[in-house]
Image (cartoon, rainbow over all chains, first blue to last red; front, side):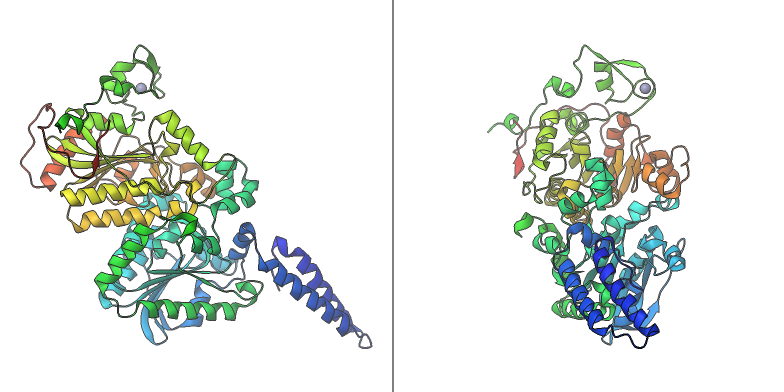
Length: 320
Length: 306
Ligand SMILES: [Zn+2]
């Protein structure tokens, strides 16, 4: 069953009508509804294309959070072979909001790390809705360090509402863990490529996305704060999230203009949630291209270029 | 050129800058309610003489108290592009900036300076909470990078005083990008084997804590400073329970292994001198008050403050 977003309601009505007609016809064999249903299908198809042609920033936030969108686990299963999860921070716990381990990408051994949100109630709770605790960042630090020592490229998949704001997380040094993870990203002498597949939520995203190359899916978002949070602070009204989403420039298209990301990965019409396999394949192609562009670079050169990339970032504003 | 033009002796009244109450007034400690004679308060570095409550202190007042003879030279910070996102909430971002500049008399939320403390040459950077909550945008990022680069060039340690509500939302993703940018600055210091000391002051939260403010070789906090990633209100809303007394305060973090020390503001200078001289393998400092440094040609690239 399709989960419709609020702005997709007109679409839901048309698709619902087509479905009703066909259900009727299944009961009464003499009824011929196919012509009418097909017309509705065409209408729905057109409407879908129109809706997604020019999504507003707030609508993109909703699409980026869509529960049917492929998540980290789906990309790992679809794009990598011999995935061997490696668990734990050797200190306190294993954080299930962060997946990570050894895997092969087009036969090449790599380290893959990402936030996983879960796909149903049980897995969402296990995964803490993709909100990592310090252990998650510290596991990632451990895996990035291992990748560095063994010369394995690192692929990170970003999809988090943000780092978890919890009591224990704070007591165990959420800030320090995020800061160290960003520092580790900057210090590894192996290629590091990131794809923002859904939500790039603030510091929790930066901790994995301080990369040589950063790509974003067409309808994903990356922001310093959620539009709701920004609205309640600056507008003193959390209902002003549309305005906040607009002002924050959190879409892939704006971030490309600002020079914060390097490339945009096209999504199927209607978003990655309507064409999961195509979206996964497109992400795979971009990861391959990004890794290819970094091939042959020496460790010191990678580190130097990565530093330079971030030092220069933002110097031109929207004119970048 | 005479050295006086390169070093600026702060005016006596700079401690009573325009955002502070005039000398003849009393102010009330927000913690214990004691009425404090203003001069007494500023001589005690804005710490209540009755209950030790640490009130906010401006970077300029802090540097005046920190550096030998109150003398320091500002380090020039490269100017970032103005209002990169053309951000507008209920007010335009440039208007908010102008209002902050007017009320503080400062250009932005961080001041970088070079000078000596206990005859130990250092670079210092201090964040100004009174300037838009000390928020970290492109300018603050540039300031930290400039401070680190200057420290590396002159082979000096960097002492950074943090105070911020977090990233500056009006710069959107570019404020978030100051987390990796300032972390590059920390990497430059590490690579040059120069000490980086962070003094966390009230409050230090959000993306600031989750980047340069937690990456010091030595982490010192002022008493009772709020230091966190997520603020207590956000956490209470998330977990729907009351947080323990002192949660996310400096002493709590010390207990949880997140800090090296919690140090009273009036003891900070001596402590910084002691630690820095050991890390720089210099002989112990001469005790007591020190006069201004001897005449020295101005350091290259430094902006004399008129
Ligand atoms: Zn008091």
